[in-house]
Length: 192
Image (cartoon, rainbow, N blue to C red; front, side, top):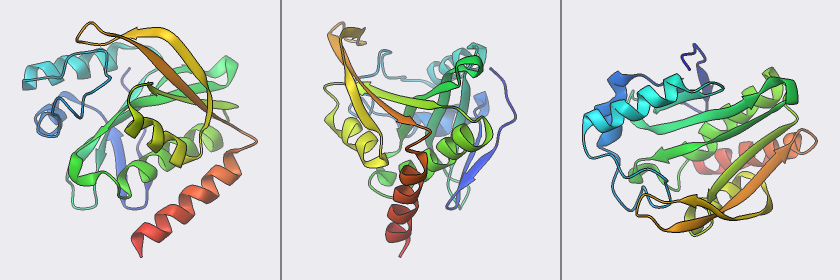
C-alpha cells in the first residue's frame, strides 16, 4: 500500500518505495542474492516495477527503499502482514547490494523498522523469516537478536520449483529493550 512513512537510523533513510527506484534496485540484484525468494530474480526494470506495483497494492504492507548517507540506493525492505488489532507485523523482503553486506546497512535498517514497530505502533510481536536453506539470511536475522521459533516444513515453493522450508524468528515487546541495546552497540562498534 502507498504510505508516507520515512524512517532513519545511523545515517540510513528508509523512504517509501516507488517505481522510480526500479533501475537502481535492479543494478543490485543477481541470482545468488535472490536465492530462496519465491519469485524469479528480476531481469529488467519492468520486472522490478511489477514488484513495486505488487508491494504498493498489498494491504498491510509498507515497502521501503534503503538510501545511504550519500543518497545511494542500497536495497529494499518492508513491513508486511501488519495486523494492528493483533499488535503484530512481519519484516522482510529485504535485500541489499553486496557491497553493503556485513556493514551497518542491515542492522541500521532493522533498527529503524523495529523502533517504529515497537515504539510507534506498539506491537507486541515482530516476526522475520527466511528460506531454511539460506544460512546467510538466517544468521543475519539471529545477529539482530531475533529468536528462532521453528521451521514450517514444505512452506514455500521457490522460483525454480523446489519446495523449501521456512525458518521463523520473532522478537516480542519484552525483548525489545535488549534487542535495541544490542543493535545500538553493534552499530557503534561498526562505525568506529
